[in-house]
Length: 340
Ligand code: P6P
Image (tube, rainbow, N blue to C red; front, top):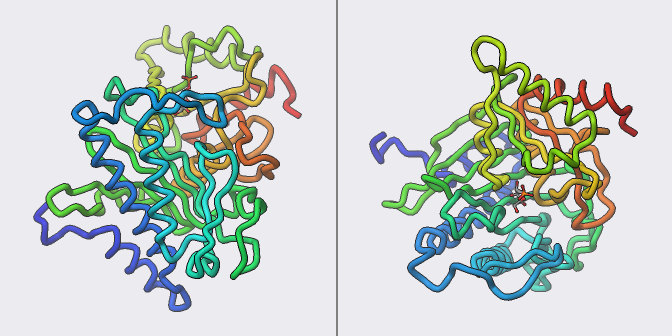
């Protein structure tokens, strides 16, 4: 594609805004700011190994997970960029115990809040496997002109205005969803812009790839065990219908699922009764994206987007991807244990 045909993310979001005369362009500006943070983080990720940015930071986060230097860099970058944005009233991050309200006049009068996992999959950093930033954008429920409240960050996923991720993989892409659909933008390094490369992304209704950490299977419920047996038994038939793929980086596993179809699962198990992944800045944004692309996302007992959050860092089980595959695994889960 010649550079004259490139549509940058800014041009695209402005065009989308023009479809709605009453739209103010604030969301487009916020997405631009998140894109800027993504480019800055990308710069460090691409040079990891050459600069003193690899390895452990020497502290743990609220989850009790060891923080990597790049985790901290990504978190600090997002906090700074969104503080300088004129569209963000405050943030909540996987790396921060509490939400953060920006107190300058612009921010106090901004109508959006952003939740993010600044660098998901960071255990993959040192082995050069794909990692990513996940973000979720809500309209604040607290009063304009005043500080954000916790309620701004405990909204259900069905109240999301937009959600997306930046994947630092073989190329760097920003994928975001609004209620209008899902679009993907690839970073063109020569001009430093995210350019439209995957318009109107749709998740295939069915797929052949199941993605989960099989190492946990001994702790899975009978329903999950029976589903895995179904996948492996099916492979004895003519023409293997299933492949197992698991990168251990949610953004990478979800990007593949969105593009190729399949199902990603992080179920509850005997030692993690709520699974591992966090509702507000991992499961809800991914569920919003996949449902906007025609996929499905459930916790087992309900749609992810309908869960009313009670804690900022709460975890939920997740089954997400091609609608028919999610329905199939739920048949097994519900057959063996009527979910609450
Ligand atoms: P496990 C990365 O730490 C992460 O939060 C997700 O990106 C990933 O899907 C999951 O945890 C991997 O967890 O237990 O399989 O290592």
